[in-house]
Amino acid sequence: MLTASNFLLWIIVILMAVAIVALSRRLAALEDNAAWQSVADHDRTAMKLDDSDMILAQDSDRKVVSIVAAQR
Image (cartoon, rainbow, N blue to C red; front, side, top):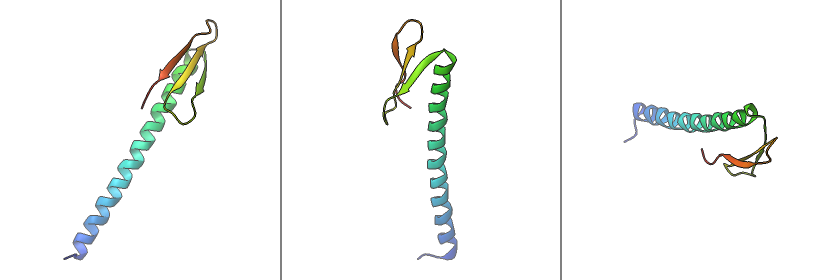
């Protein structure tokens, strides 16, 4: 039987789950930004591949292409 206290408990559990998902997505975005920053710090030209998690970086002096971040 669903009482008022059980209902509030379920609401709190659902809100916590939503918050955890939102924070994990934010953390992934911050890690992605950190990868971009590391590329910028090393004087490279960076290009993100569509919606994948890979970032290609090319050295400005050696013309070498490398994968900077393969996955989150």
